[in-house]
Length: 182
Image (cartoon, rainbow, N blue to C red):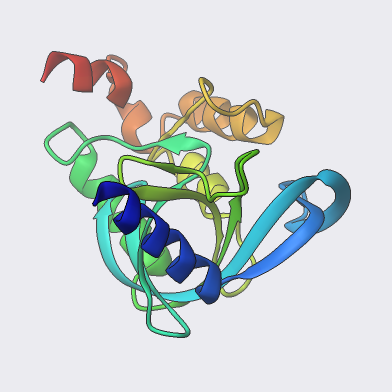
């Protein structure tokens, strides 16, 4: 039964998104560049709910509800210091707005999914990289365990130096450590 549900979810996602073979997201300028080994699904959706500072729900143009985890960042948990502020910042960026989502496929041709969420790059309607915006504002950590984008590391370091957002607290606890202690 679980396999049938997974297959139905994937089929519904694929019908909601555009498949782009041989392209890769270039995080520097928000454009796509050719890279034959990469496969991307491209979606436009309206954000209908914010779960926390790195997760939201969106409604695709053909009315499919998807839960999306923003790639490259890890935001404070709801009950963690700055959790509410991070969620509010993300809400101000994208809630109720039409956004652009790009999901990289796994080698098996399925969208990258963890914890019942699709992992994706997310862009505002005016092309801003939401991961970058959250890092610049000090509302999330660069999730270096899963991403090595130099710009993201720089944005986090700049926010730390400027002591903006969660970096006001010199003893801020990364969410991955906070989750271990809950």
